Structures are given as C-alpha cells and as structure tokens.
Length: 150
Image 1 (cartoon, one colour):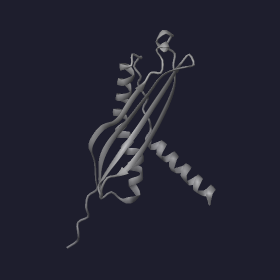
Image 2 (cartoon, rainbow, N blue to C red):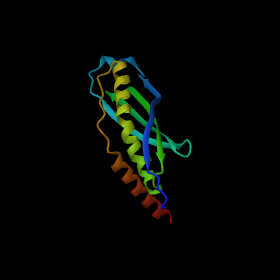
Image 3 (tube, rainbow, N blue to C red):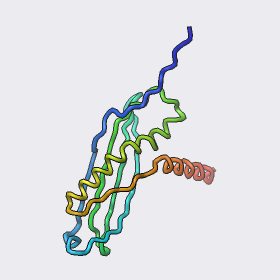
C-alpha cells in the first residue's frame, strides 16, 4: 500500500493590529492649504511561532509634509498568524515574503486611512502594492549582493 502524501495547507488563522500610531507634530499644518508630499515605506517580517505557524508583520509608515512642515506620521504594524503545513520548502519564502503581506495589506491600508482621518486630515487611500514583484526584486538584489561579496 502506498503512503498518502500530506496535502499542503495554507490558512490565515488570525489577523490583528499589533501596533498603530499617529503623530501630529504641530497644529500650524491645519492653517495652511493642504498640498502634501507623502513618503510611504513598507516592510514585512516573518517569525516562526511553531512547526506550522508563522506570524507575519506588515509595517506601513506614511510621513506627510505640507509646505515644508511635518504634517503627520502614521504607522501601523498589521499582523497575521498563518498556518503553513506540509508546504514545500522552496515555496515558503515566496509565501512569507509576498503572499502573506498581500493578504495583510488591505487591512493595513484601512487602518492608515482611519487614523489619518481621525487626525482631522483628508482621507488617505494607499495604492495597491505588487508584493510578488517586490519579493522578486529583493531576491534578485540578494543574489547580486551575494555575488558581489563572493
């Protein structure tokens, strides 16, 4: 009798805001015409919790300047606990580095929009992000860096 091969399982088991903040350095920004310059940064981090679970934290930071004055700094650490069971080893990096952040991004985007609006600023909707492309570029850069250090 042939042994049955385990079916790969991938599931989001929990999603939560690990941390969020909004800083408004000065009230003078509210007296000027609103024409902001935005600086948006994204990063993700994966932490293995046990044999089958990973915590992924997607960090989204938005800094806004208006008339050369800091208007606000908004940041969210959107987290998710993902089940990865019997996933081929060569696929885990792509899942943790692209698939999981892609799942978390709409939630982080909503939190950023909410806290910016609660800070009395116009609604801010972040554009979609292609995490697959970003992951592929980071892998290519890592290969270039490895070759440069060899």
